[in-house]
Length: 112
Image (cartoon, rainbow, N blue to C red; front, side, top):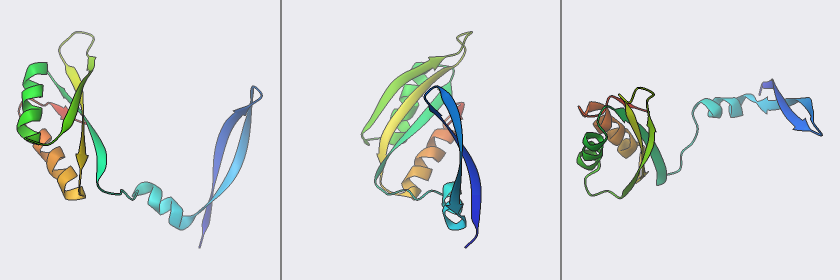
């Protein structure tokens, strides 16, 4: 099993200390494809022009699922508004279906 060297920096006593860390090759592969245990909480950031239309889109996409919506940010010129949505997903397939539903909805410009 090959290993890789990675540098980490930490501040101790107001100075930066660099450390070499050995990470097994198999562990590095898992960094790219993390294991997700389901059910789990999942957050989506939805960006669009009209906040109320996006709130309606969330209701359309999630139906009777439990979820929380919170205002996140308004662009400098006020054209775009982002909302954070948090819900519990029970499988990877369900997570992907929710993402796809948000992505296809006309009131949502971008899903992050």
